[in-house]
Image (cartoon, rainbow, N blue to C red; front, side):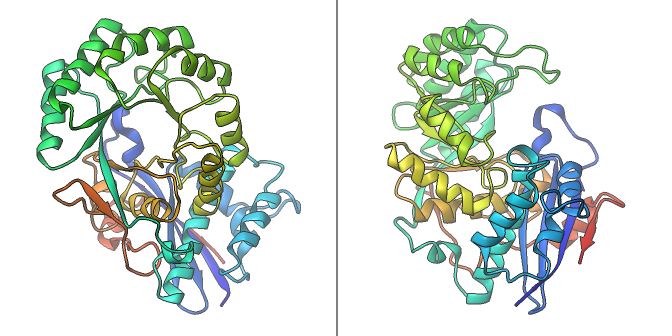
Amino acid sequence: MKITAVETIVLRVPDVLAINDSAQDAIVIRVHTDAGITGVGEVDSSPEVIRAIIDAPKSHRVCTGLAQTIIGEDPFDIERLWEKMYRASVWFGRRGAAIQAMSGIDLALWDIKGKALGLPLYKLFGGALQKSVPAYASVLMPETPDAAFAEVARWRAKGFKAIKLGWGPMGFDVAHDAALVEAGREAAGDAMELMIDLGFYPGPDLDLGWDASRVLDFARAIEPFHPYWLEEFLPPDDLVGFARVAAGTTIRTAAGENCMGRYEFLDLMDRGNVSIVQPDVTRCGGLTEARRVAYLAADRGLPCIPHAWSTGLIKAASMHLIASIPNARYLEYALPETPMNLHLFGGLGIEVDENGLAHVLEKPGIGVELDESVVRQYSVPGAGSSIG
């Protein structure tokens, strides 16, 4: 089997809201083969930037678009192709958007392999250590304490045993922030875990960033409400700040969605002293690199709980990772009510049962397929391409 083409499809809903923009556009990667098997991946990043990295022509052997790097190759050679893409993009890659673009291709290659062998991905990773884990509802923090109480109560009634409240109005007034978290804890009770995601830039205009001192003020104000973790509270390069916060609060610290490649995760763990590692399989280097990160975390006694916000595909792919590693405790179950999340892959990808458990899919490959009607409805004219 040989790779014949790499297709990039850019999608966007007509009205993008700044508070929720990452679930309102998408780039889907399809890798085609001469056997008629097509693998599907995605990247949760800037669609046009990712498309350019994939579609770029060759300039130099260490400066080549990713599609040109893998066309004609055997899609089963996933480890070798990962290294080939990494080395072919040295001049413009090694971190950042190039690793993100590799992630989408890596997911599609694993999807091809699973489909060709008739096996779900977790079996290709050595089988399941666990076939189900608790899902945590992942939603934006509402504007008022009453609304925060209602939001948590809504998902508790649906069977979720954990919930994460993130971004939204937090970051401008510690007393108001603490009141929001207190309301969430009141609705959650003692039987439901409550996670808090600050987002390291309060406000849609990125006009005010967190620093370690402000984060510690916030953390100490919400410690009485026993959040399970405090997430992404500083820019990813502020490792000194991460370590300072970790030393100054009783709350677990969590991060990783903004890290690309294992070397950034090593810094986050060994210098930033985070308690929980959160690779995003559509950004960190795909499932290939996410598994490396998970075992680096396991070697340090740290949980690996993947970040999974954008579509049904990331939920399904993350669940294959979770099933096959020894240190995963939850699946993030993002619930933005946008077409990309709700419909692009025929639903939310993974269903959550009445006990709040998510189960790994048993279908071949990742286990989800594109809804072509959604692709037709939201494709950006002129923004799709196929190299091959």
